[in-house]
Length: 108
Image 1 (spheres, rainbow, N blue to C red):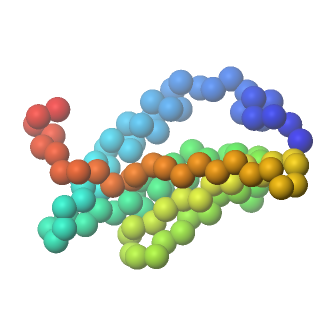
Image 2 (image 1 turned 60 degrees about the horizontal axis):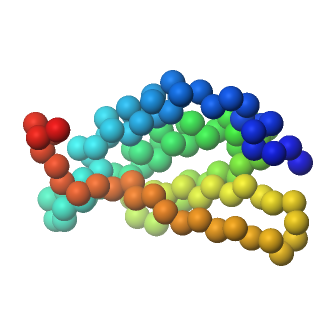
């Protein structure tokens, strides 16, 4: 199996800036302050998913197994797996909130 650098090649700064710009553009929709503001994480999931699809086993021929899961409407998550080559060796990473605390854009 090829390593991640062989698969991804040189990482493109513009693609990361574009992804971050799109995610920041969703900030007003992912603010979490019930009952008035219920975040719509699916808006962020859409952008991250589109960035990962070229590296997906199902859509791009890449090594990543990418699944969009949702247990509540508009509050989805992504599960991304990079399968290893050795049985019994597991590395797990959990993290990334797609919701944010409320913020006033005028203060930015």
